[in-house]
Amino acid sequence: MTAITLYHNPRCSKSRQALALLEERGVEVRIRRYLDDPLNDAELRDLMSRLDADGAALVRTGEPEWKTLDVDLQDQEQVIAAIVAHPRLMQRPIADDGERAVIGRPPEDVLGLIDGH
Image (cartoon, rainbow, N blue to C red):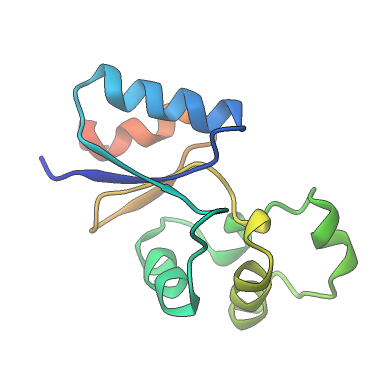
């Protein structure tokens, strides 16, 4: 099995739970603290192409930054620009095996990458 990249915020309980679930199963996890090392435009587009969800699912619409923006959730270009400018807007955690990516909401969803779901 290849390593899984976990886009992780250690202050987030869901992100910590997803990490623990993967580690308990012996999965090699590469942690990317996306707030300290934000994704650029190309990386975000690449990640979005592997998600089984639309761009709107990638946005944390409850964040204060989101409420100040005038972004159309249906416009992928606007969503990408908003996340690049405000990394806190990216949903967390996200597990990515290089072929597929899943949002860990609930955290157990990340197990789909190793259980073949």
